[in-house]
Length: 418
Ligand code: ADP
Ligand code: ASP
Ligand code: MG
Image (tube, rainbow, N blue to C red; front, side, top):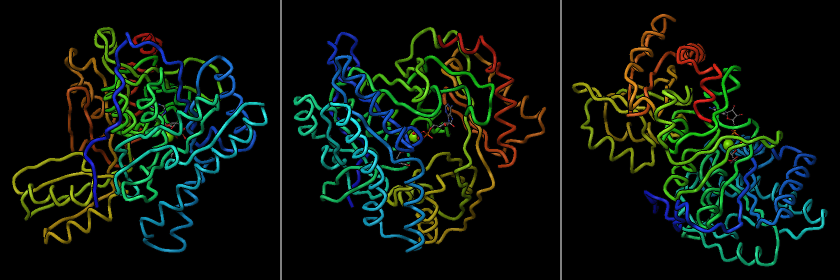
């Protein structure tokens, strides 16, 4: 199997002096295309952008929970589905929404064409289920745009260097959109979703969470990596590496959303903390009796995405996504190590570029959790993040108390990002 460590999409300068190309990539998530009326509304929105004089590439997700249903269907037939066939199956959801949307656009009197990831020239490595984009061969998209058509590209998928259909991982229509925005030198990449932007915490868990007007790529990377699933992690990596301007906004409300851009001095000075994120979808492993070098090279070879790593004496502790559990367990069994795994912990993270210049964030985090009777089991940090593994049942409460403690529900928190 060939895998790549990086995504080689042609660079577009993040350079402010680059003349506008008049091209926009507009991505719509699953809720945004969940039924016929919603697809028609998306069609109208794409047409409005075209009529406004822009060249338009739409990237769509599968309708509603189609992808979940396809995964469940596969498992009802086969307990461990063959990876190639699974990709053939789950990639169909996006094809449905794009074809339907193209029909709706044609009915509105505009030219439109839907393309699978493969037809759109999204070339990936061969890692089924988590393929990385290695190249975008956008010839067909350019041809269609030159004919004045609105182009609809099926998100979440590509074609491998071995000519197989691949998928890019859950939530990866975002990644498709950003890769296309980079390859086509789009003026911006708009991510339309079911919330109005990136919030100081998941608005479903913290109703008083505030919409952020702007966050830096680095903050967004940390937030996406620690559970803010509003943007797929790899899409943010690509946007940062290629200087793609990202605008996360609502499909249903016509308001400005959140800009994800280069960090500027204001972000550093005004806002100490941008958000509190959380995840329950992590497994924590404790391993003894195998050297770290051997363990982590075996995990890497098996494509396990290791996150937190801690080594104290002979014991190594690491975390990885729940979706990588089977692969991780196979590695551990193959290494003849002593190990255990638990899904009983979740992780809450406090993220903010301002941490670099404001001391005391760690003190406030610990004092707040302590006052709430929550004991962090593992704590890890980066220059702009403090992450605490806590008992799963405490995660929601930990997010809420930290959100209050850092004053994120206040108007001032929102203004700090304006
Ligand atoms: P889509 O289907 O449009 O891709 P997702 O479900 O992938 O949408 O992402 C949007 C969801 O992300 C929101 O409904 C929200 O519950 C969740 N979310 C988690 N953290 C955040 C956050 N910090 N800001 C905004 N949304 C968040
Ligand atoms: N439909 C895919 C998923 O549910 C990709 C996406 O929505 O971004 O993961
Ligand atoms: Mg998503």
